[in-house]
Structures are given as structure tokens and as C-alpha cells.
Image 1 (cartoon, rainbow, N blue to C red):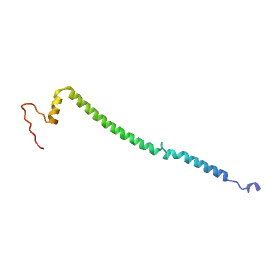
Image 2: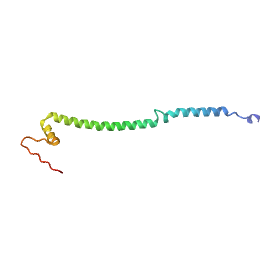
Image 3: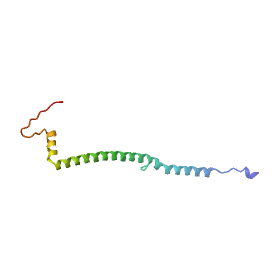
Image 4: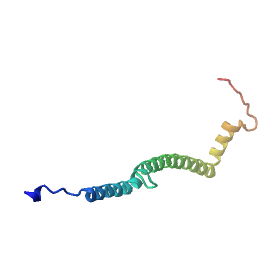
Length: 101
């Protein structure tokens, strides 16, 4: 009966549990708050998506400008049309009449 009445020393297992808990917290901290954290990753993904949207808009603008430049290189009719509409140029013996909208 005396062997069941002995006090068990629990200080070492408690210290070991606290130490292990501290190590787990130290390992988890960079995952949630550090440079390569989950929040940082989500922010970087949002920046990448925004940059892709900007790049797509710029590519569309570049395609439009390239097509316009090609049409201007290709024929005098496109150049004449542009000069008439944007610069209000006219040929000889023509009269330009402007109407206000």
C-alpha cells in the first residue's frame, strides 16, 4: 500500500511540456507573421493579379496602336482620313464647314 501513496514529481514533465509548447509557437510565428507568411503571400498574389490586369490592358493598347500604325504605313487613304478628321485639313478647292453639336 505504501507504493501507491508516493508523491510523483511532475515539475520536469510540466517544464518539458511548456518548453515544447514554446518551440511550437516559435516555429509557427514565421508562418503567420513573418516575411513568407500566409498574409504576405495573399498580398503578393493580389499584387500579381493587379499587374496581370494592367499588363493585359497595355497589351490591348499596344495591339490597337500597332494596327493603327500599320494602316498608316500601308496607304495614303488612312493618312488622309486621319489628317481630315484630326487636323481639319482640306484639299484644294474644298470648303470646310464646321457645325457645333
